[in-house]
Amino acid sequence: MTRVGIVGGGQLGMMLAEAGARIGIECVTLDPAPDSPASRLAPSIVAGYEDEAALAELASASDVVTYEFENVPVASARFLAERVAVLPPPESLEFAQDRLLEKTLFEEVGLTVAPYAPVSSTEDLGEAIDLVGFPSILKMRRLGYDGKGQARLERPDQASDAWREVGEVPSILEALVPFDRELSILGARGRDGEAVFYPLVENVHRDGILRTSIPASSVMPALRSKAEELALAVMVRLGHVGVLAIELFETEEGLLGNEMAPRVHNSGHWTIEGAATSQFENHLRAVTGIGLGPTTRTAYSAMVNLIGSEPPDDAFPGGPGVHVHRYGKHARPGRKLGHVTVVEDDADTFFRVLREVTRTADNT
Ligand code: AMP
Image (cartoon, rainbow, N blue to C red; front, side, top):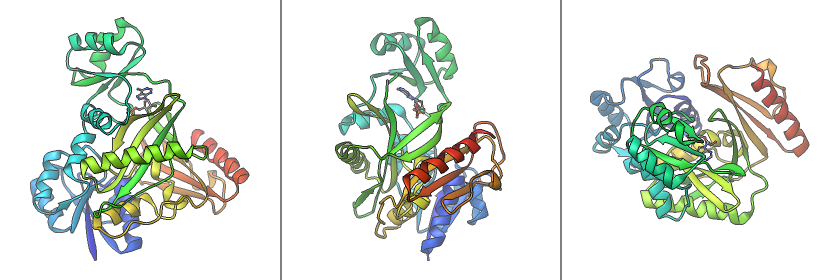
């Protein structure tokens, strides 16, 4: 049986292990928490991400190692890569960990980004404001997620507060984009270079955290093929193998690249029930070198995150089209504790059930 090591044992690791069990792939995770979500489903090595003995143990227990979060220390990925195949390659991590490298990569393959300037000091920030203008967002180059490590700027007198807010670390100032919609493109690329893409997904965020993802129905074919072409170019440039997600802004002028994740992504959770092959299965197929599965949407589908608190099962509408996933995490404000997928063949039923699920998720 093929064994896949996963650095990180959060909900993404848990859902990878679930998908693996269905196709005869055994997963083993590495996570510092003894009660990580994935540890309920897969053997877990409990240790820090820089613990060389634990990394060596993960390498020897695995035919290939992957990861479920992008802030895996690159040195650890390289340590693993000396012992076992690491996919996606450490280069994908390097680019995804630094917003400046990421933007440079997007521009290199022809994916436009919002006007930006790097900032390393308060003086830089003044110059960046001259270039980028207002309104704008100052973002930490590294380690930001779910809108953390970001400060919005509307006026010059907010500059020093914003610089303090991001922790006075290397950052970028980025123009605030008046987007029509936020979209994401998710695809998987196999070891043989074959790539498949899921339908574009429309994402709604609240307080910087993803709330709802719906495979976008009203996407022009030209927009979809453009997004696929750009995502493929990013994958090829990185030598990427596995799932890659790119968050995009749809504007009047076309698509802008926001950021990428070299891993399975929250905006692809609907694929578990709503696509012919889930993103988790396709990620495992890609990194183990078996053929990728079809990515077609099988019904109207959507995903609603459960953030901060979890309603009980009986609070959600019943029926075969509602799937509640719980990650077994302790509740904390702003924490993703689970998600619900709505899958229906009929459009009217789909929108009605989705409204009910969203209301239930909101009222807790
Ligand atoms: P990020 O961490 O870069 O994904 O940002 C989190 C969320 O903040 C995004 O999903 C957007 O809703 C919003 N956001 C980030 N950057 C911009 C931007 N340049 N213009 C408008 N909204 C943005």
